[in-house]
Each structure stands twice: as structure tokens, then as C-alpha cells.
Length: 357
Ligand SMILES: *Cc1c(COP(=O)(O)O)cnc(C)c1O
Image (cartoon, rainbow, N blue to C red; front, side, top):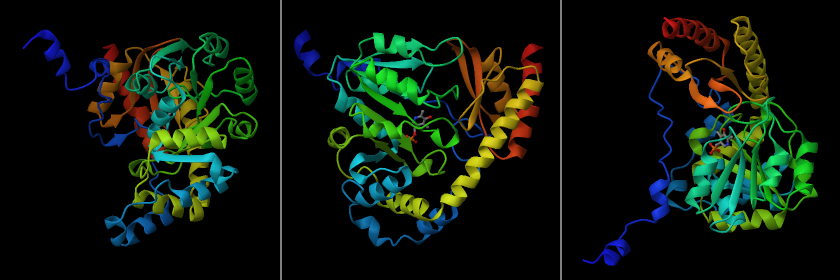
């Protein structure tokens, strides 16, 4: 066979050769503080609903675009259903949004560090991406992001992995000073910071992405959504396609939104209290955690990868990030029940002394 025929027989697009398969190497560990899910569990009425779902639901397709869930989410965020799009996790919404907003070869700009999936989704959609280092105070460099001229700008507030927020007035500046479609990821907004949702009423280039994986404790059911102007949201919905929220997920999410908000709010308050207590305890160890508005704490620790492995050997999983811009080696620790935080602190001290030795 000639070279050209062999080339034509490639089984996948060439650009996929450079796309890594996302794998944060999450092996089972007794106390898992790696993924910022709700460590108190799932809300009670959501659980009761899941256990009681008639199996007949499973033989039929779910709703096309989760109309009932959109209505409940609109009540929760204070918008109308035509300003909401749902998806199979907010990952699905982000992926669909990038595909909807930018043509192949166009540029997506994001802060560095931020959510690791963004450059991966950009690549999967044949987009270029550029990461702009955060400022020394760990805030997003919005001037530099605007100056990229990118078709799409992604900011995360509170940011993963730092927990630092972007004020609403700064987002207004970004919208006024760039022509990009701006995606604001509010996966952790329930734990702190000003939501950008009110800006969607007056800005048709702003999509605010949210999830039920963190505060609502439903990560395994994969329920994400976004808020934006009706025309913007409609474009994301076309790019997303039908049936992406499965029948179980929609029923459980509805139960959580209609009946479990007091439980969710109570556990948000606990997560915030324990995050702040954890921050203080880390400071008392002589460390310098970044003040966080999320349900996790990012703390610079020398040799973070080795410390993270040593902690795992003692039964506590945290997420190491080697060599982050402006931070260096850090650990990201999810906030949960205080007994878990105490065990994490004990094992962190132990692991740091083992790695130093
Ligand atoms: C966890 C997380 C998500 C993913 O949420 P899913 O809805 O579970 O896909 C999105 N963005 C950020 C910043 C996250 O940390």
C-alpha cells in the first residue's frame, strides 16, 4: 500500500494523538479528599427518590432536553427556563459550549492554574488554547486574557484549584473589553464569591456554568447546567444534543431541588466552617494556604507529589499539583466532616516529616 492510502486509513483524527486521556490516578483510599464532592453524602429526599424510581422509567428514553429540570433550576438560580441548558455533568456543558462558541482553529484563553479539562475539551474540538498565568495575588489576569483576542475566554470563580474568586465588576470589565464569548465556571459558587448569573440578563456573550456534583452531592449522577441569554443557551443545547441527562438523574435532581434545599444549605455552611478551620490549622503548622471561597483548600507544600503519595500510604488521599504558576508545589484538600480533617492534618504532618527525612 502506498503511504497516502495508509494515511487515509487512520482510525481517528490526527489531533487526537495529542489529547491525553484524562486520568487523575484516583486509586481507592480510606479517606478520599481529592475531588471536592460532598463528603457528608447525598441529600435525603434525593436518596429516597432514587430508591423508589419505578423500573419502567428505565425502558423509555428520558426527556429530550430536561424541560422539568430546567424549570426547577430556573427557580433555584432566579432566571427563566429558556435561560438554562443542562448536560451530562458540567463537563458536558463546557465541552458543548466550546464547540458551539468557536470554530476549529480558533483560540480559547483560560487562567493558569485552572480546571484541567478546559484545554483538553478545547483540543477535542480542534480549538487552540492559551493559558494565562494568574497574578502574584492569585487573582485572574483579566487584562492579559482580554489581550489574547481569543474567541472564547474561560474563567472559574471560585477557581479550581486555588479557591480564589473573580468579582462581578471585573467580569463586567472583561465583557466590555473583549469580543470573546465568556464562560464563567461556578462549580463552587455555593461556597463563596459573587455569582455572575445577574449579568446574564444584560450580556448576551456570557455563559455561567454550574453543577450538582459539588454542593448537591450528586457527582455520580452527572448533572450540570448553564445560565445565559436564550439565544446563547439554545446554541449550546444544539451542540449538546438530546437525551444527555438520564432519567434517573433528572428525577433525583428534581427531588433535591424541590425538597432538599435546607439539607444542602446546612451542609454548605458546614463545609465553609470546616474549610476555614482547616485553613487556620494549616497556618498554625507554618504553612501558607491560599484563602479559599470554595469547599477545598490549596496549600503550597514542598515536594507535593511525594507528600501526597506518603499521605496515601497512610490512608488519606489529597490532590497534589506540581509547580503551579505563582504557587509552586501545592496540595488541594477537600473540606469535609471535622474528623476527616483532623486525620488529614495528622497524616500531613507525618508525611511531611517522612519526605524531609
Ligand atoms: C468538579 C468541577 C467540574 C465538573 O463538574 P461535573 O458537573 O461533575 O462535570 C466543573 N468545573 C470545575 C471547576 C470543577 O471543579
